[in-house]
Length: 233
Length: 233
DNA sequence: CGACGGGAGTGGTCAGACCACTACGGGACA
DNA sequence: TGTCCCGTAGTGGTCTGACCACTCCCGTCG
Image 1 (cartoon, helix red, strand yellow):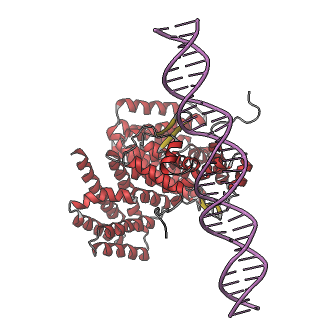
Image 2: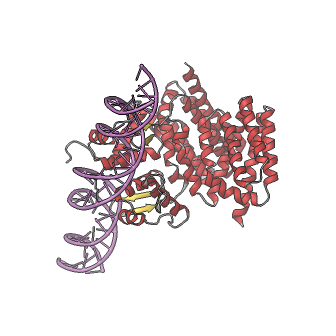
Image 3: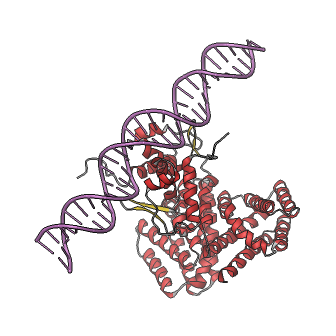
C-alpha cells in the first residue's frame, strides 16, 4: 500500500528518536552545538513546529539545552543532567508512595554512606562537618533544611557513584523534603535528627563503613517509620 | 517597570508549571481528561503552538497522555508512568557509568529479591519458575533475554514496592541489557547465569530473604565485575 | 588599541489554516 | 424493535510564514 516511508508514529516522535540516535551513536558529542531548528527541520523533512516539539522533549529529558539567541547544545550527558526529571516522581507522590520512595532512599543512602566512609577525603569530610555545625547552630527551619540537604549531598558525592548521587538528589527534591520534613520536625524530632547526623559523621570520621551504613539506614528509617504510622491514622 | 506580570522564564515553561501544579494540587485527577489544547491555550493566554510544546513536555514526563482525535488525559500517575524516562540514562551511558548503573542495580535488586522472598505468593512464584524453565529450555539469545527480563521483573513486582520495581525496570532497558549482556554471554557465561538464577529461585522458594539477597547481589555483581575488567583492558 | 554599536543569525512566540483520527448519534436496514 | 453503518462534529497532529527577543561577532570610531 505505502510508497516509500513506513511512517510509524508521529513525525515528532520520529524526530525525537532520530536525534536521540545521533547522540547515542556519538554523531553529536557532549557540549556540541546542534544545527539550527530550521535546518534540522529541513533535514528531517518536517516543519519547524514539529521540530520544536522534538527539541522541547529532548530538553526535558536533559539531553539537550536551548540557549536563546545562541543555539541548541548537547548537555554533558552526565547522570545529573539526565536524571533531573527524577524529581517529578517525588513531587507528585502522595500517601503510600512516599513510603516507597523513602524505602528506596534508605537502601541507596545507606549504601552511599557506607561507600563514603571508605573513600571520603579529609577536605570533603571537613565540608560535611561544616554543614553539620551550621545545622546545629540555627533555629531557622529553612536554613536547617538547606544544610541537611547539603550534608547528605556531600556524603553522596563522596561515595564516588554519580548515578547514585543523582538519584538520591531526586529523592530529596525540595518540595518532597519540605512536605515530609515539616510534619516530622514539628513533632519535635530535631534532637533525634541531630543525634543521627552526629552518628553518621562519627562513622565517616572513623572510616567505618558498617557503622556508617547502619547509621544512615536508621536515620532514613526513622522518618520512614513515622510516615508509615501517620498514614495508618 | 513592568505592568502586571513578572514574566519569568518562557511562556511554555510557565504553562508546564501551571499544569503541573494543577495535577499536583489534585485539580486534575488521574485518568481525567484535560481541556482542549485550544482551550488551555486561551485560558493561559498563550498560543496553541506554545501550549502544544508544554503538552509535549508533560507527555515525556509521563504525567499526561495525548490520544489523537480524543483528547489529553492525566495518566494514572503511578511510579511506572513517571519513571519511564529513567531508561534514557541507561541508553545513553557508556564506559564507567555502565558500572555505576550496575552498582545501583545490585543494591536495589538484592533488596527487592530479599523482600520478595518474604512476601511472594505461590502464584507469582509459579510465574517465576515458568520463566526460569523457559530460559533454560531454549538457545535463542533473544528469547533467553526476554525470559531473563521477565524473571527479574516478576521478582521485583513481588517485592511490593512499585517505585523500586519501576527503577529496576529502567535499569534493565532493552538496549542496555542487549549491549552489556551480549558481550557477557558471548564469553560463555550461560552456565554461570543459569546457576545463579537457580540459586535465586531456591532462596525464594525457601522463603529465605538473606539467601535471596546474597544470591541476587552475586548475580548482578558477577556482571559488574566482568564489565569492570573489560573497561580496564 | 580598546570600547562600542549595529547587524546577522538564533531560539521564542504567534496566527491561521488544513489534515487525520475518534467518538457519537441518527438513520437505514434486517 | 434492534442492529449496523456512516456521516459529522470535535479533537490532536502538522504545516506555513511572519514577527519578536536575544546573542554574538565584527567593523568602526574614539
